[in-house]
Structure formats: C-alpha cells, structure tokens
Image (cartoon, rainbow over all chains, first blue to last red; front, side, top):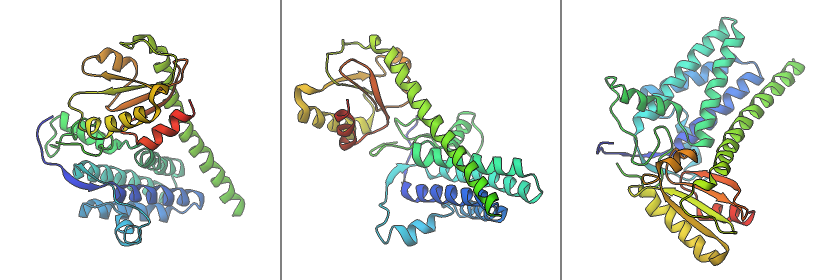
Length: 164
Length: 135
C-alpha cells in the first residue's frame, strides 16, 4: 500500500443512502411500481454526477440536524463509494428499462441485486462496488488510482483510526 | 390488486429471509472452520472462556481501539477470561485456516474451546462483554 492522503468520509450519509435505496426498491417491488425503481435509478445517477450519495440529502438536511442519526466520519477514499453508486445506478437503469419493456424477471432481478449489495454494505460493512474499484486499481485501469486505507480489506469499511 | 401486493410482499419476505440466512451461514462456516482449527493455536486453551484475537504490528485500529478494549475486558473479568493474541503476519497459516480476512478479528470460544462468535473488524467493549456473558 502506498502513502496517500485519505479524506474524511461520513459513513452515516452512505448508510442512509443505502437504507433508502433498499426501502424504496423493496416498496417498488411489493407495489409493482417500476416508476419508483426508475426514481431510485435517477437519484443514484444524479448523486454519481455531483459526487455525493444520491439520498444523502435526507441525512444532511433531516436526520443529522435533528440528532436522529450520528455522524460516523472515517478516514477513507470517497472515489470507490462514488464508483459503487455509479455501478448501482447502471444496474438500476438497466433494471428499470427492463421493467418498462415488460421484462419483469430481468428487471426485478437487477433491482434485487442492488438491494442485496446495498444491504451487504449497510449491515455487513462490505462495499462490493468499492472492492471492484480496488480490483481495477490492481489491474492498472486508467482513472483508478486509490489504494485501500491501511489494514483494511479492499471494500471493507475502514476502522476508526485507520491511516494511509 | 390487494392479493397481488400480498403475494409480492410474501416474495420479498422470502428473498430477505434467504439473504439473512446466507449471511448467517457464512458466519457459521467461519465458526465451523475456527472449531476445526483450535489445535493450530500457538498456545493450548485453558478451560475457561477465551478470546482469540488476530492482529498485526502495523494495524493502527488494533493498537488504538481493539487492544485497549480487550485489555479493559480482561481487567474487568480477571481470571474468568483468557485472551490469546495472534500476530497474523507471524502466523499466516493459522490466520488462513481460521478464515481471517482482515485485522482485527476476534473469535470468542467457550470453556470447551468451541467457537461461538466471530467479529470481523473492531468490536466495542460493550459488545464483547455481551458476548462473553453468554459463553
């Protein structure tokens, strides 16, 4: 692992984003509302565009100011999380398109994959999209340069006090 | 319409159930591996609850968070608890056999030497205390 500068990343904002994605996708499936899945896809896309968690605004404007959720700021790389959200956006976009085209099995399978990966991240602390990012770093793919924080398995949530 | 929603809700519950089940199975798999690897430990197990703590010399959170938590727990419980610290870089075979993917990782074993809990990553003193109480 090379020396690098980590940034402060609030994992509570990421977790809020994941929990909302999980909830809305399950609601979309139960109520059979492809439009809701499309809204999730769009929000994740906008989040990827501005480099922030798509539903992070719920945390910054609602949950954090009221003290309903405490911040969990860790030294981490924000880029793998942005990449993970972008991968989720791609899955959700293809899934939503499949649903609108009448390919229900394909569409809902993709939506459930996003639910599973978001749940693994929110409850298990393992970000598959981040692991993919670090894997692309190993393959020396241009644009992928960040190394995982010290003593952190690629994709796992960094521990408090981790250093570059 | 309502029956369709109920059916889809049922599907969602089943899918979530299988997801949680898969996560539980992975943890059970790690514990089973740990149970089968007890004889690989560098030190013999005493007949009391034991924490097997995997770390490395360059693990910052181990030094700043995990070791102090384990030290405090050992101070609180005294002779009732035994802690075995294993340097995963010095004993890579042991770490691999126990399925350790990152440090710190802690396994909690009961007095018979059976692994009951595994914590991947830093675990708080309160949680360790709760787990030890059930051993």
